[in-house]
Image 1 (spheres, rainbow, N blue to C red):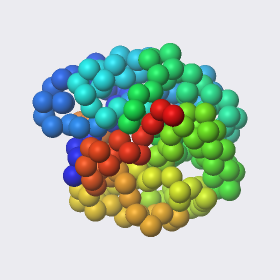
Image 2: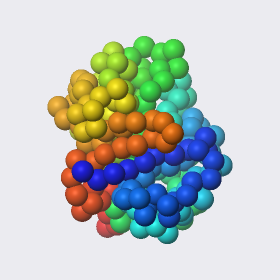
Image 3: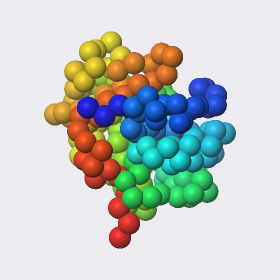
Image 4: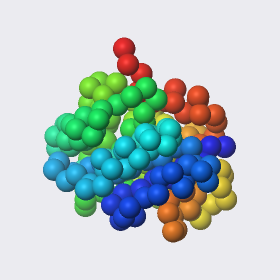
Length: 198
């Protein structure tokens, strides 16, 4: 299994070369949240992953009360401003807050966001979520997207898989002092799920 981490501005300055030397092969960094927030450390993190030859991923924290298209545009524009996508880069939607909406509204938001990102970013995004949130129906219709499941209470590589998925792709198995993930497969298999220029 490949080892990975995920970070945001909460982690402060990340020692990318140190993580790479310790065997971290892939990483996700928070890029955006809602329609106008940009993580102030995203560009630095994006370049740090690049420089250490990690498989690089960016994620958007969903605010389902907002406009999914506006949020998807903001996400893709932020990545472009940080240097854009290269072959094998990964994208993800962090879907863990319902903003007080009913599950069908949350799921509709997520589907519209994913369709836009897939069409305009040419990458099928991962869905990052946790078991109870998905099982309430917030992820209906998202089974075609690879599942990045938060399950720190479960043994590494053995998360519970919520509806509507049959299997997991990435398991976030620890979140202290840093979020740690595993991918069940090789580097080549992981980059196959990423960006491929036409």
